[in-house]
Length: 312
Image 1 (cartoon, rainbow, N blue to C red):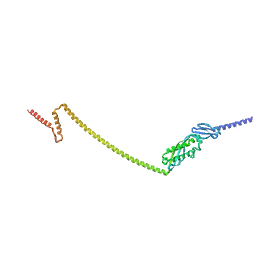
Image 2: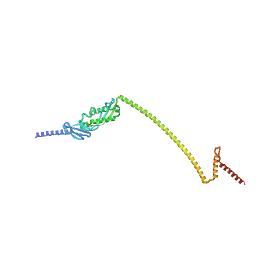
Image 3: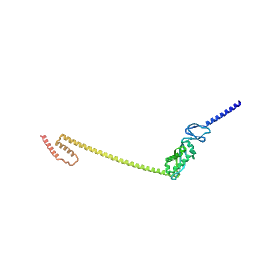
Image 4: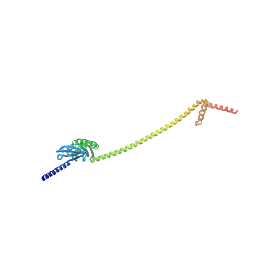
């Protein structure tokens, strides 16, 4: 009985140890897959499946995690590279590649070292593509066509990295560094261009000032002529109004005489009044009509008769 009890205790201890080891193995093979990650699982050394988000359990000694793939967008910032333009100018260009893993399986098994370090597949492909693109451009085109360079490199890299499960979103040329002598020549050219633009601006300013002054003189003369014209029109209108009023007055006087049925004597007296007014002027010769002379004699005779009657 004592022997059996001892054997039972040993088996109990063994079973406990086994259960403890199993629990440790289970806990050790639990994996929590994050939202931005994918797990590549191998079973017996071959691809088995890709794990998504959640709590997963590996079968001990059968399954293993081959690779944890990060799905966030990454940046490949590479050292400046020496390139030669179409017109045989050597320069350094610094680029940055923005990419993202879209297929974890292809990313794991497509190429060795896809993006880890300066000797990665993506880095070497970027360097060769950059040299090919710049080789088709001249120096001036390289300096002024950054957008074209970025787009051309992106299209080529995106097509080349598709079998690797990588999507190239964009490429940015950070810096273009020509040789020192070309930089000095460019600086001199820029200085000459600035001086040229300054001279042109000064000349255009003088021209504009002269044009404005001439236009001001022209407008001043036009306004002055217009004022003189208006003044002459007003004077002419005043004289015309005066003449019109005088003529209207004369016409009115004649109309009144006709309406009053004035006889020849009245008309003759009016002529005498007019003659008296004329005699008051500065004229040295006055022509008296014969009718007025006869009337004067008649008036004298009538006056004498009137005097004789008064005496009697």
